[in-house]
Image 1: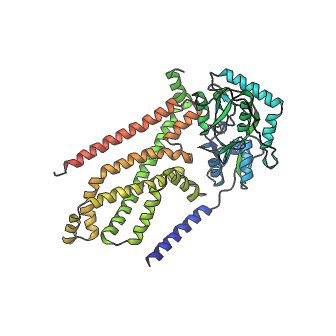
Image 2: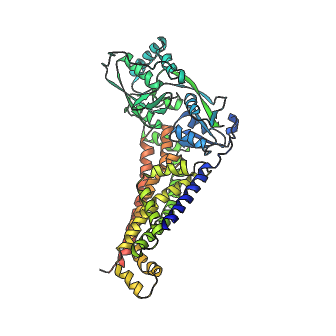
Image 3: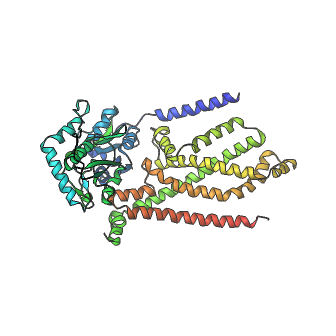
Length: 259
Length: 229
């Protein structure tokens, strides 16, 4: 008798839960960038998308800690659109069949490596290494190796590479595929391989420090990390706080919506 | 960068202080309603559990309450918040502040329940027996004899629970609620200077908590007046 009552209660709770979760998500209302006016827009805190979304007329900006949370909120109809970097957006779209990208780009940007304001010497070294990697095709090979299924061989450090200059600490936010993410215990991604190649050229040992995205620049500023490599777009505001290397990727922001 | 320049950049430029002001309001709003919900839930659960312990009635409800206590006290509040937002209210258009109130209220209710139960059980059983032998029903004994005495013992602990809850709401930013902590984070993400935003957020919490602690102290002194030694 008592057990039956409990069982009934559980069934009722489960049914209520199922009803709540299975409600249909609202129809997509954003079909062009102009449609963003007055909408709720999901972003990741501290990104360039966050800054630009603030300028949208009557727009309401929801600042999530992670892109994956913003995308989850989009899928559940909690936000109308997400402003996100193109390459990462492609990874999300390839893994979720209920979202897509607007064909018009939102804003152009370029990624670069952030370095402490007082460390112009490291900036010069890194720029030299980047130029060399660009010239011998290593950079392109690294980018190609993360191009979905048809990616080529991943970058491997040469045997007996010089490590005489000691450890170089890289601050990153490893939730940003294909630039940086975790694979088991390892960090992988274009930024990670590129920095390994840079360190191999310069004689450093790379050490990766994974943190929240909005902590990356403060970590470089305060000297907790030597470089910040996290798909960081170069902006005027950021330039006041850190030095940037030469740009290594030219990309753009896109608008992600429900299908 | 000089202090005044940094102050200007972090608070005055682009009206950034508003992130803190709005955030503070949101934090207080969530805290107040969550405390109310937690108190209601907590008292109900405590009464159910005490009734079961004292009389053996309400067994199914007691089991349910124990399940609630185990689950809520056995899991971190951030995880509960995320589950309520992303799983339970998955595709329901619902205000996030409401989600936070529900999550923190349910969480707080579990702790309140145990505090209140402790208070009720601490009232000497002779009081209960006296009430019953005077012909009062169980409910009336509970309402007029036991609960008033229990309340006096648990009030300071309940007030402490409010203080804890206020600080716990700082994780509301996980579901993109712009509460006080998140307000500081937003400023930090725009100015890249950690010092002032973090310190001012900490100071604001501290001031509120100190004020609440002062009120609790006052309350404790007033309750002690009636204490016969």
